[in-house]
Length: 400
Image (cartoon, rainbow, N blue to C red):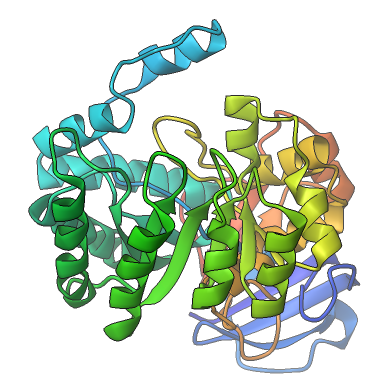
């Protein structure tokens, strides 16, 4: 798609520094790729193209959401209500979602996930990682990968598929046999479109050695690796992520300074999930400060899932990162764009630069600080995906 984005009040390109700023800017897009950015008054002559009037608002790269569990059916509302009341609740947890997801048809799973995906795009997300993990048998995990592939082909965003067979050990399954099954399914997952393999490595979930087996199997067939790490307790999962060269370690509520330094040295991106911190009310430990002080590159994500973070809005995640963790606004926006791209090892998204994919979020604020300060407002005015203006953004103005 060809497009001119004009009358940009403030442009945060996220090219080399989070604080980089262009005022009164314009962007030219040719065949879905950015070919020029600069001051609007210096826009060079070029082929005619539809124009998107930014109306003096803030433009940033499209949000990159590197940790989601978008494919599920059913509800966990009883669990949520019990948590709010401070009660223990043994209603099945992930197993409840696995049962409902297994009972749903492929078409129903796609329709539910696509509705969530459209809301994500409405909120400015242009690249998303989507995990399996609510199948927990080879058959159902692979069909979830088929749903994820369809989400990538029928919605105009960038989708990265992750096989998360090692989410939990299903009730009644022998632990060793189940790990063997997950390892054996890795090549099949690769053939069905998975780019990544993830493991929930934590206390009472999967051990370090079990995790190592699964991720080594992933590396052997050329898949990237990532980890749910240190969410429930300190286990050394962050150190394992560094040892194995994982692209990211996510959650990290119990990461140690030593684990954080190992991540930084190995280039492992730390993905923070402030919606989970809010939902579980785990405010006692400041993992952001530990990771920041160690020099870990950071990303932010919704962790969109039915149990602990039913969230489809990256602007809300940015607000929470600032208000819960104390992240500076520019750093939070970097983590929600360029940081997410780094967690997915992508250089074509998460920045507004010549040669990058033309993915943009036109935010309905005049200044980036207002995005955080204006709580509860609809934050996104328009989303551009590969030069195409998302059709449901009624407040944007595109002139042919």
